[in-house]
Each structure stands twice: as structure tokens, then as C-alpha cells.
Amino acid sequence: MHDDGTDTGTTDIAPVAARPVVDVAAKNLEFTLFYTADLPKLVGFLVVQGARPDLAADLAQLAMTDAYRQWDTIEAPRAWVRTVATRHWWRHNDRHRHEVPLDSLPEPGSLLSRDEAADIEHRHTFLAVIGTLPPGQREVLAWTYDGYLPTEIAAQLGKTPEAVRSALRDARAVLRERYPRGEVTP
Image (cartoon, rainbow, N blue to C red; front, side):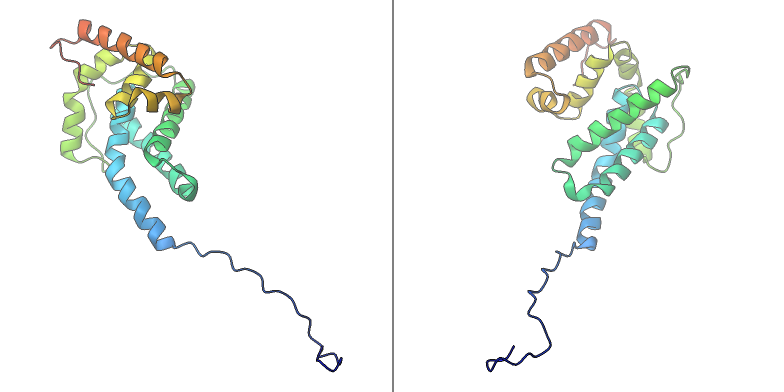
């Protein structure tokens, strides 16, 4: 309406607020940097939990794919992908209980460099001993081995810090007893 009361034929509608535009290029770069830096560590994390290196690489890829899909909502990506990768590992174990682990490591795939594969191979004896631990102790040891503190592990696993420290202490005692060189890495 004009000041004189005549209708202009238009209605005054408040403009719709524009949705924030997500910078896809920035998101992709941020994820790519995370992926490149963390994938080999995530594979090692799964190997410590008992996965063969080739399977660990596949499970790590699944977790990273899940992370990319939810990248904008993830607050702690390193912990998030480890939690998701562990769940993939558990599901795999539930579906494939009949499989027998290989005594030798397969040739490194395209996801691991030769140095990364050699590092995993050097840990083979250590990992064989870890395989004798109960799953809960292996999981706590894997988080510890990956640089997390007992309080951080407790928060991720929904346990008390005391329970995590107890599992870690028990695991280390077994490893000291069984590891041939008497060295406990984590």
C-alpha cells in the first residue's frame, strides 16, 4: 500500500534468511589432511586390537568413509574414527568367527607404504602376545598405544578411569610376563 491508501499489488514479506553456504573445498581439504595423517595410525590401532593388516586397512577405510559423511558434526575426529573402526572390527568378528589368522603378513597394499608395513611387521611378535589378552584389555591397550590417556579412554568407552587403569595394569603385567624381550611398548 502507498501512503495514500492505494494498493500496489505486492505484499511485504520478510526475506527468507539464506542458509549458510558450507565451503566444500575447505571441508574436503580439512578431511584430506586428517585422512592422510591418521589413516596409517588407524590401521595400526586396529592391528593392535587383533585385525590382520589387510583387514585393518579395509576397516579403517570404512571408518574414514563414515567420518567423511558426518565430518561437519564430528567434534573429536581421531577418537570418533577409532570408536567407529572398533565397532566395524567387532561386527566383522561376529560375522567371521571361523576365520584363522595368518601367520605371515601379506604384502603391503596401496594404503600402506613399505615403511609403515615394515613397522607393523616388526610389531608382529608383540601383537601375537597381545592376541592372548582378553578383548577389553586389548581395546584399552590399543587406545593407550595410540596416545590416549586413561581418562580420555574412559570417556570414549563409557568406563571409569579406574577401570581403564586396572585393565591397562593387568594387560601390562601379562605382557611383561610373556613378551620375549621383556619390553612393553605402550
